Amino acid sequence: MIIVDAESVAPTLRVISNGIILYMLALNSFYALLLILSVPQLRRHWRIADDVNLRVLRGAEVVPPLSVLVPTFNEESSIVASVLSFLSLEYPNHEVIVVNDGSTDSTMERLIEAYSLIKVPAAYPDVVPTAKVAAFYRSSVRAKLVCIDKLNGGKGDALNAALNAARYPYVLAVDADTFIERDALLRLARPFLLGQGVAAIGATIRIVNGSIVEHGRVDAAHVDSRWIPGIQTVEYLRAFLFGRLGWNPLGGGLIVSGAFGLFKQEYVQAIGGYNPGTVTEDMDLVVRLHKYLRGIDSPDIITFVPDPVAWTEAPVTLKILGRQRERWHRGLIATIFKHWDMMFNPRYGVTGMVAFPFYALGEMLAPVVEAIGYLVFLISFFLGLLDLHLALVFLGVSVGYGFLLSLWAVVLEEISFRRYASAGDLWKMLWFSLLEAFGYRQLTVLYRLRAFPRYLTGDLSWGVMTREGPRSHPPAEGPGQTE
Image 1: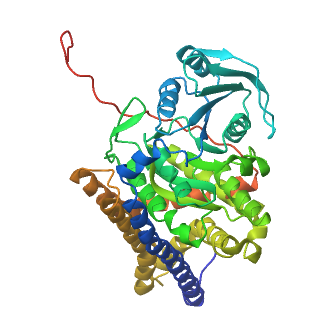
Image 2 (image 1 turned 180 degrees about the vertical axis):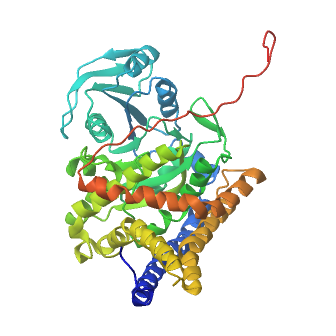
């Protein structure tokens, strides 16, 4: 039996507690800085985001043509509607390239039937190696549509196949189950109008759970009443409205969401395309792109535009949420260690001196530090050494500070783009901002901690991510219908 002398460990616990408090204070203060930096950016975009400016763009030649890349695997129930929504996006000139990544269901058959696909020779070079392509199709009824049927190689490999086939200088990577707002591509093109050279553009992802979806479009945006998807609605607002936007004046962050991100094709091919050997191919790609741009001394920017919106379904169970957050963090760890040479490296400018250290010392280590904080709290309590003042300060800088940042994200949403029009949705977001701090936050810390041992074993699995599907309007009652 080990007997612990409480008085002897008290100084050590106090030092650890003070260190953790300073770490959490610094981390959340940097988030607050991103919030402050995002406000003038948000105001600037909001002022030029009206429909008058969009009408000018609809027939403009100043925006470049682009290819929409859609990797898909076992999406037989929704693929036809999803592809139709991508084909119907408002943009002067775009094509849609769907890649069936070895689906084991009838995804390919549904596409062939719905869009009258005809098998044709593949007339493009294999710039980036991929798993074997079985067939190349064009639609006889939709001139913009191209479909590729290939052996399974994962999402990154499917994106590379689409990248090879893309005819246009810019490519937009999207998920097959993402619902893109009809004018989102026009809004995404704003940096081109400002005369900026563009390497990549990120945009906003929002949670579709609770919203009404018709024909691949969000018809009525609402916040889900259930606590798991509801809290994620607030999380995503915080992550995109200032977590991504605040990096613009600093030179761009390290993440462009894989569910909705625009890239210059030439650059993506030059760095070897997407890396199939990672579970977060989007972050890995952007970090390599930062390196490449520095290497060729390119002035092109990696930026974020807040008002183009794509909607995605969030996990609704703790089991699926845990798999998702563990995978995200495992990919972050892998990317950080793979590109460790960027750490505090002035060769990479702000990216090497600020962004990379933030993601390494902040995002990657945060769950470890916070978990140690909770552990020290419990040990101090059971040994009778709990300093109430220190405990309250720790909860304030970790939980309380996070709540205030979430609250400000909701405020920014309400004074800018207001996708949620009802007062009920506003109250839900305020409630979930508070609820997030108690239980949910601690669970995500646990999920992210699991990523470290799985990374060390070389685990590249995604896990099963089941979805419940979007809500739609109930059918109208009419003759012959019964309750």
